[in-house]
Length: 361
Ligand SMILES: Cc1ncc(COP(=O)(O)O)c(C=O)c1O
Image (cartoon, rainbow, N blue to C red):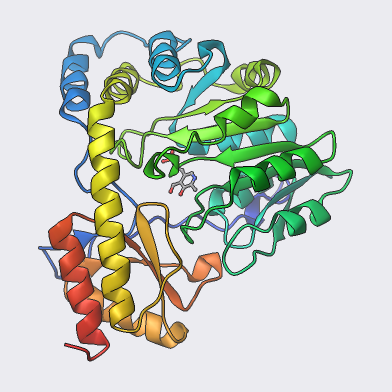
């Protein structure tokens, strides 16, 4: 390797993304509550489709993802021509930055926003701009005030990760309306399915030409290990994104499992109801022992401790009991731990352990 071989400017400034821990050294019977996964996994129908796909492993997948896009369009009542599928919604975020932001351009996201917005902006050579939140909630006024003629993309997750908070449809519409003409609003709906009756911003997308939505099969659909996401937006933007999408970015296995998962909405409805029940239970159990959280609309609770030292000590205590939660210092929340809503027994175990840590049991 010679010193003449160099990556593009800014690439070496990207901090590596660190996923939620999956193991604890020396422990076997662990419970992973660190990556916002569905504790019940995918629907049986998705698993059956996964199994069937083994018979076509020697075949290239189709390049247009037509069957999966049709399934998404049928179930969500959308136009299949305006759906794009990717390797997780991460890939759709990446396409947006690659296609619409470059050197000299600014990409906005919120203070505690998902780390991939910054990484994808920097990978595209653009300037990441972090905008303050109000009490761990997206602040539309602050976002609009941060916009200028260089702003190309504005990312918000609604509900947000890792805060779990959400802004109203009226506030999202106000944001879309107030953006400068060259900017796109990206509504990241990774947790949209957990919110009863929420369309992820679809109705706004149908009214405007500057709003795109990203969605994922990694959370409520229980397919995080398979890596499938999708996006929806104005035809002109989706056409642009398809030009930089690898033709075979999704395998037959991903396409078939995702299609079956999307068509099994009974399963999704059951998961949503179970999550809502246990999320309320967990938040209340934590609050009872002096660990508050904001009202979460997602599949996790952001537990707040007195300070970073207490959060770190609680994390160590939980790890010792084989309970893996997420430290969120990298999201500028060093005094918090993000705890995924697991099944009932996992929620009971983690609540009991936090109570023991607080000396309340
Ligand atoms: C807010 C948000 N957006 C996007 C993603 C990316 O999900 P995936 O690439 O698995 O679809 C995540 C994953 O944690 C997330 O929390």
